[in-house]
Image (tube, rainbow, N blue to C red; front, side):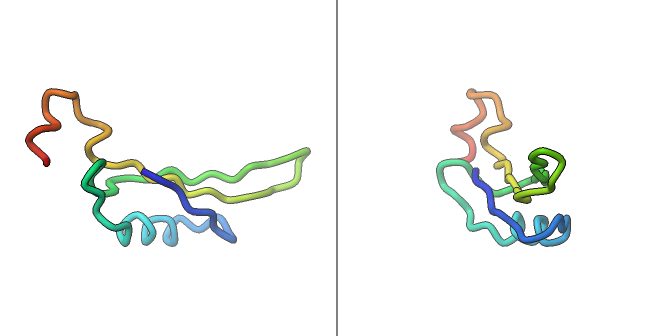
Length: 67
């Protein structure tokens, strides 16, 4: 569904981004997220909040029910 970059490793901010994400007719609402921070040569770098949508988790035969 998408991702946002964050200034710090903040689970609550990532959850708020997921909850505030606009409903997408192609993929549905954000239902959960993953947050991770890249470490390059031992130095913490970018923090990414990646969001997963509802429709991407469903088997293909169920997708027509959520149009």
